[in-house]
Amino acid sequence: MNSKTKHILSLVTIITLIVLMVGYCIFALIYFDKPEQKIMCKQVVVCIEDSTTHRFVNTATIYDYLQKQQLYPIGKAIGIAEADQIEQSIAKLSPIKAVDCYMGYNGNLHIDLCQRCPLFRVLPNQGKSYYIDNEQRIMPVSNLFTAYTPIVTGEVSKDMAQNELYHFMNYLLADNDWATLFAEIHVDSKQNIRLTCNQGVAYVELGKLTNYAQKLEKLRAWYQQYPHKNDPKIYKQITITYDELIFCTKIENHE
Image (cartoon, rainbow, N blue to C red; front, side, top):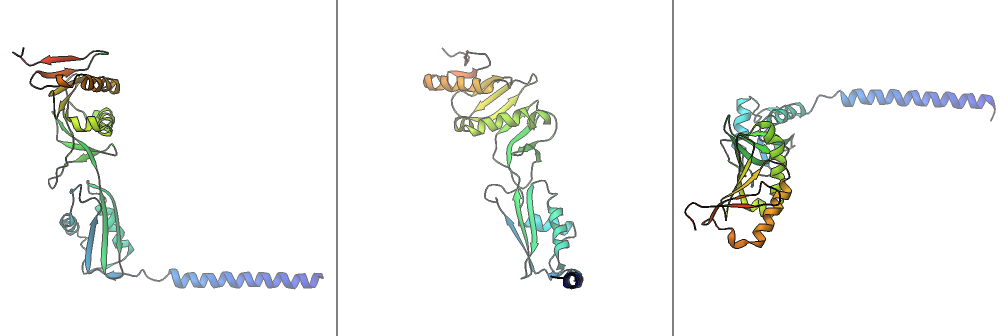
């Protein structure tokens, strides 16, 4: 191939590239500069993923909220921007973990929700009641629904609830024996823990939240070895605070 031919091929290549680039620019200007397509909203369809277990929000709650925020979409032209605005607004509601909002071609605005999951409820001596959810965050209580969870009472700070008590509660709930047995945790002024039982002896004194796994294994062994002594008519309390020792406090006047 001589130099003249090479020069011609180079020119053809350059011209072809220029034509392709100009063509793409024209296509982009025509296609991407089109105004966003909006659809008239005929209906709002709310889908709450975990509505059978938690009912902190319902369809009526979402409708009322959108109306108060002047975002109720029915009768309005809704596009991506409007759907995104609604999504971001609903995401601010305290019971909401995740939300997805999108417009269907049939005129339905779909709002798919997932609620936060409370792990336990805190009733402190000072301040208002609240939940700690399964992501270690504080969650306000709701007037619409009360979750069936273990309860923590007493001298409980938010820091303690989100840290030591969160990890302790996860430990209890992961064990079927303890999840079934313990209904309430009480924290006294010295940060000692007392567990209220659903059956058998009414209370278990755990002491500080240290070595609680070993303490509870010691209690499990006691239950297995002396099931007849787990009698609420004889004992009012089991103390597992001390290493290698278990104390049972008898009910007064019981022989």
